[in-house]
Image 1 (cartoon, rainbow, N blue to C red):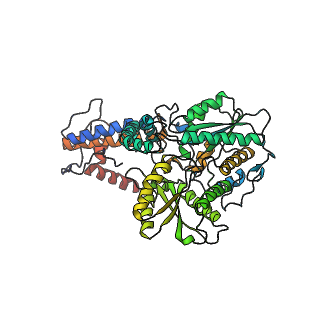
Image 2 (image 1 turned 120 degrees about the vertical axis):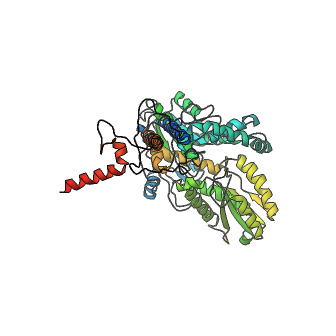
Image 3 (image 1 turned 90 degrees about the horizontal axis):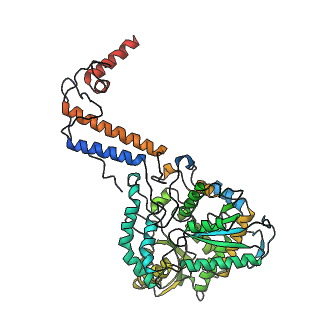
Length: 552
């Protein structure tokens, strides 16, 4: 948002006298009144902003959230360039996943083939309690919960980024946005049955994963931590500690990493762990994070299988149909700040289609677009509705739509794609609109979750803090992020600059009012206060004269 608080001084003119350019400034506990009211207001405003930046206040994690979204400066992450390719490639090799290539390039460590799993070496001890923490967005289960869910969503600094001086207003702004969007959102949730099915579907995924792990001799419990609604991440963390879990796999149900999804949940976990270092001592709870898995062969194979099911009948006429991947969008500014989401989405779509076309008689074509944009800022393009109109105008009649970044059905698939975009497609002339279902509890996808879990247990741990260091840019490259509490280094730097600007404004205002710079007793340069001497004509003449004498 533009800074509308900075006073404009352009309309004021200074007419220096023959004797001085500026005059004496008196700074004391009581500041003399002066006639330039606009300058006075500006100086006071700068002072107020200065105070607010020294003691920065951030929004809470949610209306029912317990943990703060703040982090002390002493614990701030070092400036690590975002996701260097060599670092990520080395990490994937160490963690047992592939950084490039499609399905079939991966050699599972502990299973002969999909669906026929057997444990080899898991590094698990007999007395270890294994926990798996699913991280997801969450959603309201009743219409009465919609507005509070939206408030939690927009109160997250990773979703709505405000300039630092406006950070204390995050909650107020979030409430305003939530109240304005609530009626339309309620209508959307009402059209899909009165609430989001994401908690139910995620619970089913967890139950299936527990059963699969038990079948191969691994007793594990799945915990669900939603970011913006029940069950909250904080609740899941409390339950993990209560159950005495000492081996934890953190598995975000977002195949692609984004600051606004996986990054937000991991940052919250980082805060929780830093606030309770004894409880989260690695000697008590050995945790590891799976930051992304968009290139996992099981995930690619599951998506390809579901797409092929929709392409039945088009094997000999691939030109009559197109596959359209619709991914959830993010603001373009996130990508410019280093978010890997766009790059991972593009690679993911390419690898899925390589698997789809592996044994096809003729190659199917595809396109990629982004949905769910909010607000006036520019989001990732092309937009889904625009692409639908263009495809219809080109004469396309058959379209297979793939919700790429969603592993469970929820409002973005059941209402936005199935209803809104279907209507756009039909109006554009696309008669056969086919939507690929989300992964949900597809057996092949559950096998993928098993493989992700066991590989994470087998390989060296990637901690929460290390994930943030590796995947997110330094705070210098993400303006206003994260917002911190207390007298921090960044706040003091901003405070000092604004305070000096405010003092200078007061000084200039008094100089303009008095119109002259009288001589004073005490320390002086050229018979004047140092400030006036510095800004006066004969003060500069005295300085140049002194320099000439030093050169002789």
